[in-house]
Structure formats: C-alpha cells, structure tokens
Image (cartoon, rainbow, N blue to C red; front, top):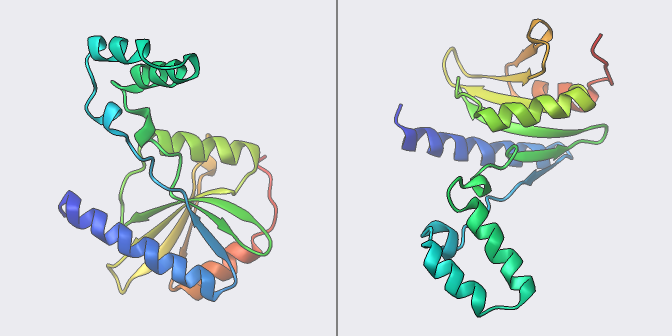
Length: 171
C-alpha cells in the first residue's frame, strides 16, 4: 500500500470514528496539526535571521530565536497523538491507525507516558479490513509482557468497551 493511500485510509477512518463517537454520546477532539510558517518551512539562512532580529522588539526576538532553534529538527510536526476521546466515564488519548500501521517513536513515547500515569488512558485504535473487517484497541505500556490488545467486530462493541472500561492499575 502506498504512503498516499495509507494516509487517505487513515483520514477516512478518523472521520468515521468521529461520527461513530458522536452517535454514542462521546466527543472526539482532533489535535490539530501545527501550522508551519514560511520562516520555518524555508529554513532561512543565519544572516537573514540576524538581520530580522535587529529590526524587531525584544519580545519578537525570543520568537525568532525559537524559530532558529527548531528550524532544523522540525519538532513542530510531532504532535503526541491524533485525538482526545471523551466518554461519559473516561477520557482517552487516541492514536488511530489503519491495519498494522506502525506508531512513530514520539507517539509510542507519549502513549506509554500517559499509561504510566493513568493506566488504560493512552490507546491505539486500529481498523482492519481483512477477514470481514474488525477493530482492535492496543494499550501501549512500558511492560511489554502486560501490553493488552482487544478485538471488536463493530463500533457498538468497541464503544461499549471504552465507555464501560473500569479503572485499573498495573501490578
């Protein structure tokens, strides 16, 4: 599967998941992508930034210094996860994936951090189209031996599980 078709499938899954959440009295909040301004995107030369620093206020210089700091490593592209899902009983940090799409390192890092503080709150929801189609919820954590995966035939089962998931602690 090409990278473009994978992105389109994931985008469709995000829309479908949001609609299903609303139908079940839940709220899916999309964490927006960061807007990259032209100064960062073009990675201006050091000379151009120094000239710009001389023509702005001290407060604006701090902003320009931040642009210089992040211009080469593009941290702005790395949001921790896709969405926040609010159910009547719990709130989840959600990363949506199609099939076996891999988590990026920073996504896995943040979901494990969330689950280390509040278990079962950082989740990966995957949609598979093979074998008649199904959904799977993964709970990434630092203890690989205790990492859980739950499979569901449809959105009704998935949301029933997410809404009614009891508070649990890792042992």
